[in-house]
Length: 112
Image 1 (cartoon, rainbow, N blue to C red):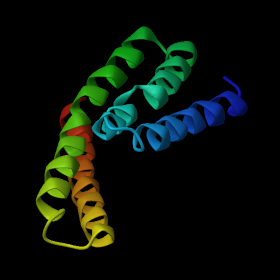
Image 2: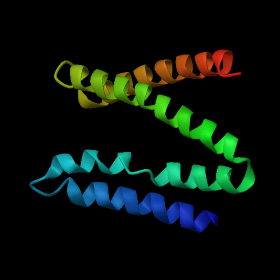
Image 3: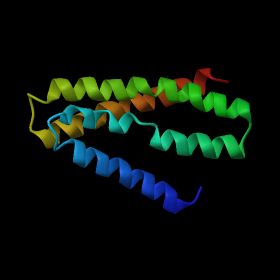
């Protein structure tokens, strides 16, 4: 898959988020990041360059990756009315990073 296609998919996602955030149904903009744009790219690359078993392993890890994302959302929800937006976003990203790090450690330790 060419780099231009990957960039175009990312740009379309950002454009959709920007457009939806201006509508009366602005909350739908939160669904756009969950569209598997980058997962499609990753699964295509892994599916064409590696075995089906490797693709299935990637899919399972992707399912587990929803845990750090959920932690990000929960922490941002809790921080949103307690901090300025920039600090709340940064803190939520830090929570995501810590939980993603724990996931990676656990995955590498127990997946083999």
